[in-house]
Image 1 (cartoon, rainbow, N blue to C red):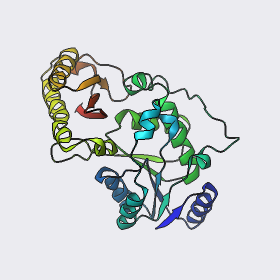
Image 2: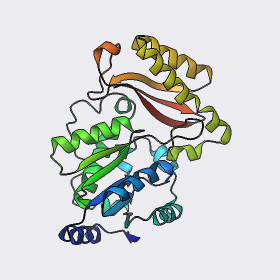
Image 3: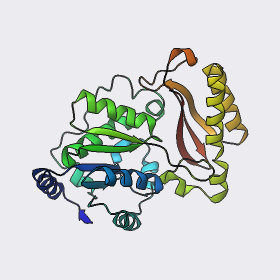
Image 4: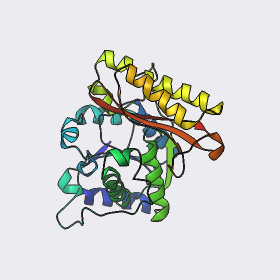
Amino acid sequence: MRKIERCNDLITWVSDCKHAGKTIGFVPTMGALHDGHLALVIQSLNENDYTVCSIFVNPTQFNDPKDLEAYPRTLENDSLLLENAGIQVLFYPDTNEMYPEGLQTPVTYDLDGLDNVMEGEHRPGHFQGVVSIVRRLLELVNPDRLYMGQKDFQQFTIIGHMIKKWKFPVDLIVCPTIRESNGLAMSSRNQRLDNEMKQKAGLIYEVLLEVKERFLHQESSSELETFACSIFAKEGFKVEYFSIVDGYSLKHVDNIFQTNYAVACTALWVGGVRLIDNLIICE
């Protein structure tokens, strides 16, 4: 595995690969890797000649400085995991490398309202930072395929919109959410949960499954959202949102008759740690 810190070195490597007619798969991460990330890596390895994984904790997508400071950084362990998986390149730039002096930042992107709901409502500016860094990484890596996980549903929906809108020559591959044995969606933030809270957080997936069953039996979204929030509140979880939305527009839907692609999305605090999850409940 080759480790690259400088953008110019990455550009040179990518150019050599392209001239040799090789395909490149790309997995962007912020590190603290888990089996969910490795599932993306493995799929990329199976579908491309080369795979690049980036590790960069992007400051522009954190609206809370304390959240940025607390984000786990485990580069040594991450590097070992990626090397054992068999990827060809680990790209781990620092902030000055990704946001050099003279680069126009911040840039405001028109995301057609996709960034104004759910995560966007509770984390102002978050998706502007996400789009900014993913766009820069795509320009550097120039991959044939970009791999993202379903857990970040709103994020990959917005990135897909960005790719289409700005005509990036890359295929977005969305991989299923990988879960713990109790159903908890794997996340780097799970490292901050103690064992008791991690087990308790399995309730999130249980509620999502119950909501899916009730939605398919034509219960209204407002009733289901109230139901979910009440269950979480009883367990001491602080809910930021629980929304049933159209999977393409991210607009709220009232019932199963309004869409053929509905997704239940939630963000909530468990033991002082903010977790997100989602489940496709109609497609």
